[in-house]
Length: 409
Image (tube, rainbow, N blue to C red):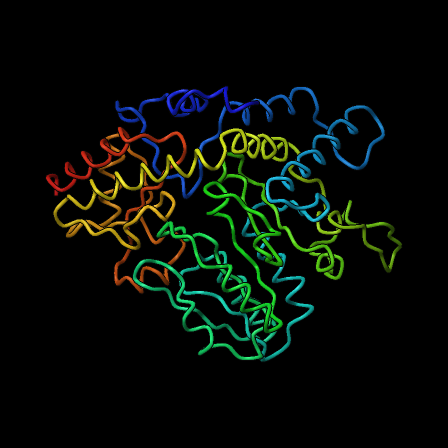
């Protein structure tokens, strides 16, 4: 597919059949993309085509369909690897980014961290990058330490020298906040950590649809991504890690395909990345994942970033013009299309319900980031988040629905 296939945003929007429906008699305005993006036709058709013409198990059969399914699955791994500038055998398919983070906590961290060691996180992580480390802390008696964030929703790296000590062995932070949409200063964190012997995991689940990713340029050690946040299917994501780290890590789950040989009392492990993919994988999801990254690549991040900046600037200007509405985090368009706000005297759930009655889908709640809500001293926020198919007309509908909610309450 070439970029010339899409002439404008309206043409792009045509690729998403779910957006053509009406909700409660109104045109659907989907602004919950930070939770999960919709899927273009090419992703849907790739998964349907797999189910119709290619379904079989992978890495097991020597018949035609099994070899075809294996080719599709491994071709998807190659395309995902290319998306982040990696080698295909460094890509471990998981159910999602959450499972990828848990994989690191259950394998590398179990093997390499000892009682008293510290995992450094930040206070703006979502639950998927907090809870696995809390569970590890209970198992291994390691300690957790947190970098604070500032009023514009960015990790405060100025305190690194104050809180760092030699017990910090692993740093795990998000590349982009799922509440504020801010891009985090991870290059500085990675450089600081590496200079002191710690390794770094990036949770890129929120960032992957909004900015180019290069594991070589970032020089991180681990990266986690979910397909469903980048126009792909649910139930599949990946963990990337440097080859030497993957080679040294023990298996995550035991079962078929992750072994070279098995006898009654012992087994030997398959090569990476198969060592970490026990059992039959999500082959259909892999087919969709490959098309999702192809869709993004066909658009180009220059187009995506430019469009999201237009939407973000326009949305913040319109939202801040509503009396009693507070926008949290950065007010400039350096963040990527995720805006959290609070409307005075109306619970965010009530706002979201009224918006839904007008066909507008937003997220209301703590966004799987309760520590951020406590820091903001609010029970929850409303979050509007944009994708390439959103328009300024969508934002006008959002603003109109918020004003209606204020009148209703």
